[in-house]
Image (cartoon, rainbow, N blue to C red; front, side):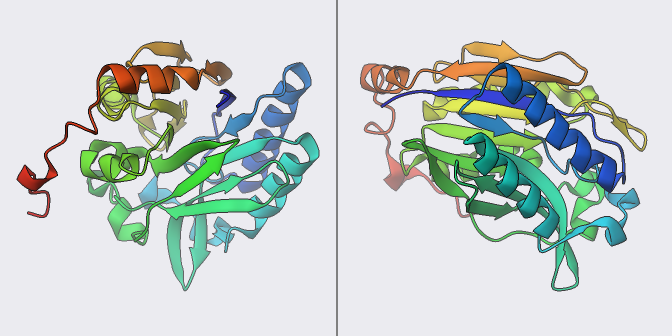
Length: 267
């Protein structure tokens, strides 16, 4: 099983600047692909409009994800790369959704995900509809999953995904600078407890009154930090060595030693 090279596009999007943000996302991916062509490109949460639920311009949302799908399908097929296209503000059924898309090397949409845990302290649950499904997919032979921002606080969600033999968890977010330590601690913990790589793409910049942290990071299944970005816009690179997965899992057989008959997670 071979590894994956990943490029995390830590993009500083502008609030409600739809056209500018689509153009910026495209230019950042193309610029990096000229230098190195990674196996996977990753974007942050709601990169088309920014994350400020009370200020989001519903009229600028992406109906059925059509603009996002057209752009990312074209880029992935042109470059021959996989794209975990973060999430975007979409609209369907007269509602707004925080939706992520994943594209393979031929430009096909191989997965989509509506954020399931909406951040009530900022009123996201009042503006967006809640997703009701999980997001699993494969990239170049590795089992992957996608979650969005606040989702990472819910260990039951990540363990449910991990029980299917997850190799890489992609986390896309707009996480505030004020709670940056929480984000990094949670990402490291999810990697260690589930013995998988965690690829975290977080945005920098400011939306409304909230300053976002950046600090996109990649953790290996031991919880070691493989790469980390700074607080500003940049592209972060990391190599995921798939051989580490078997070594770690055989040395500490967490999943074989579980006692699910004792766990009560339905309360």
